[in-house]
Figure 1: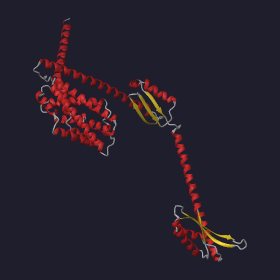
Figure 2: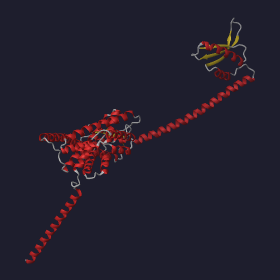
Figure 3: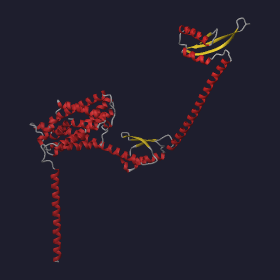
Figure 4: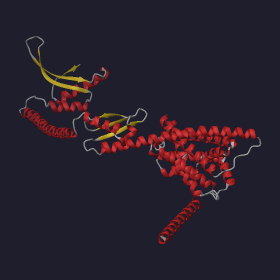
Length: 487
């Protein structure tokens, strides 16, 4: 019995030691994590507030810096140069008023809020005007990937703005601000490119680009200000003190109302963008899994309409009713696409039965075309041979006539020479006409028939006709030649 009690006491003592060691380990881990993550002791309240207020001001050099940054960003977007766009982000002063808005809510500072809001509105208006003027008058403006990347925000843009804002405010509140963090946040949150893209949309009359880009800028603005508000509240920054208690309460109420008015759209924006991102992600998975991995389907392209909840698929091959029903059942019933269950498919297949038929028809037409070319080449050779034969026969006839001393005129040569000398002749003919004046004696009269260009007036034709008659008479060795004009 005594041995059992001793064993129980030893086991109990061992358990207590283990518990004590575990508790000590947890305390040590907690202490280590607190020292690692707690940044409240490294916060400079006064310097942070002064630094943020100093960046709110918008006049003089700040205004010119913004204008130049807008032009740099616009050129970068137009040239599709990521490096140039990043440079514009670094020199842009847009972040100051946004942090001022977040700080004014956290500190109940209505004057800072007014100043920040006015300066931010002025900056937005000036940015839109400058980018509009650039893209309106610049002759090489066109859609680029840098521009198109700022017209359709998704959940990643929300998260980048929020976590970027948190990083920026933590860096701002630290004693000895980390400049590299500020530059990194300026690049990541990308406030300048959306405003330039909105100006591009206005310049080109494309309001879908304008509203999409302004939506992205609004998301960045709201969630950066929200991050600033949260960090300053967590660090227990002192509230702004008013001499009048009633005024302090009034301003606190106004700040709370405005804060809620901003927070509610921010929440709905996050939910809306998050849902759209999930839908787009499931559409991509559906296209890849159900269509691209199916060897019997050849997809040309597809379009999505999230508002009408339709997915248009354009196929190269014919789509049967069975295939259409199968794809519709997958998108509406498969749990992997639960966000697409209300979507309708609009499928367009090729009118041709299959790709093989197109290939066969192409080959047959190509063979027929080659055969036609061979026939044409043969006919062309025959025509050339016939022309050579005719020319040879004409020459032989004329030579035979000359050899026999017959008065047969080498008419083909004379006709060619006549056309060269008188380019306005459209046709020429020659014949020996039998004529009788007393109906007893018959004379043979050489007659040349000439058809002139009808546009020529008689005042020009008459002298030319006289010259032509004399020349023909000489060439044909005729004593008499009559000219007959053909109309």
